[in-house]
Every structure is written in C-alpha cells, then in structure tokens.
Image 1 (tube, rainbow, N blue to C red):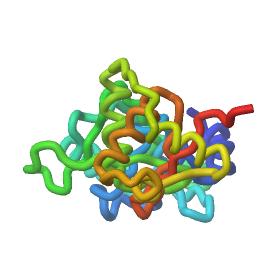
Image 2 (cartoon, helix red, strand yellow):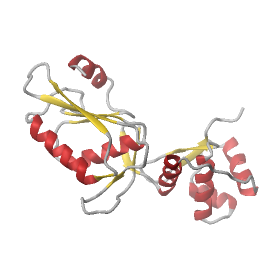
Image 3 (tube, rainbow, N blue to C red):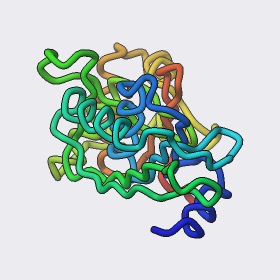
Length: 219
C-alpha cells in the first residue's frame, strides 16, 4: 500500500472494516478491536491516524511495531492472522503509519484480559464500534465457524415469533420469552437456531440486548 491508497482509505473514516489509533499507548485495547474485526468481516487497523482522519504517523515505528506484535501474541487466542505494512507519511518520512490488515476469521478468535487467561472473550464489530458479544452472538458465531448444519421444528413458539416479526421490526430474547410465555434460555435457544438457519439475523447491540429480525423481509 502506498501513501495515496492509505489516504483514500482514511478519507472514508472509521467504519465496519476500518479502525484508527494514534498511538500504541494501550496495545491490549487496540488488539481487542483487531479481534472484533477478525470475528466480523476483517479489515484495517491504522496506527498513526487520528480520529479526525489526520495521518500523523508514529514517531518510533520500530518500537510501536514490537509493542503491537507482543500484544497480539499475548492477548489473542488463537493467534490472529494479519499482514503489516509500514507506510512513511508524506510530510515526515521518518514517521510511519503501521497498517495492519486483519483477515476475516475462519475460526472464532478470543481476546484474553490477561496473557495467562486460557481462552478469553469474544468481541465483534458493528459499524465503527467493537464490543463484547452477547451469549446469543457467541453461540451463533460458534455454529457458523464450525459449519454445523442446523434444523428446527416449526411449532407454536416459532409461529408466534414469526407473526410478531411480520408486524414489528425486531425482537429481543426477553420480549420473545414474554410473548411465548417460555423461559429466557428456551427463547434464546430458539432465536439462536433460527438465526443459524438464516431465517433470522442478529443485530448486536453494545448493551448486550441484541435485536433479531427477519433475514429478508417476507413479501
């Protein structure tokens, strides 16, 4: 990637596939965002770019690269797949942007709060934010990455749910449990199965109370 291509990507701003960080001050937090990118659709992490889209570069690229690679090794499980390019800035070639291209995951990646943790937590990215996956999102991702075939039976609960979604944009686990007079765990399992079967889609929320809606609105 040359500087012109970097500038074009930065001009679009942060989003589903792009994250900016000015410094490697808190490398573990940066790595957490990289895990979220991998578990979603992959993308770019640019170190040395400000939130206002100014390409400043990092003052000590060799040191910052070492800090970041160490953090990736310590805080991700399994290890993230990525490529790294160092791009000199236009105004000061001694300052460089570290451009990490994070591959779309083929297996579920976890972020560890500390290097001694055995597995860690799952993070996902939605638009320009990264946050911890809910229980439902976690289970759906596990099914997706294991390529499991999922079957479901169309009973009264499913009928109630689909009728509700024909009139309302989305539903939460709690709302479905109340609607069908079933336990939250049963409501959760039903929504997970229907989402894994592509009948529904999940819309992760930072609050952890995710929305579920039709994958494609019926006509």
